[in-house]
Image (cartoon, rainbow, N blue to C red; front, side, top):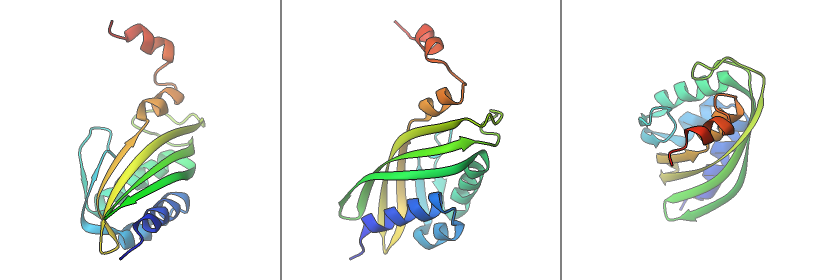
Length: 147
């Protein structure tokens, strides 16, 4: 039986921290489905579309480093709690690069079959990222809050 927690650690270390695109092919099944990576909530299916997302994200942010704080493994599923630090050095969702250093937290759940990711769910603080990039201010958000 594969050590799926070790596989998720390899995924974050190699794909994100080291920028190894080939690890995507090594650890991602051809039919893998990713939930929660896109700005519009659509799913990513297969390594090709994930690589496009990954390349765009890496083009927008440099100095990417993910700290993996905890993993919990149950059967073929692994949950990882993480934080990412990076610098906004390229356009991102229409936001001009400002050189800001940002840090956000998130959690990922990945399902493995035969040592490959077949499904993944990501939930991360996208609002916190946008606030740090200056798209929203906390004061502005409080003013918009529905009573």
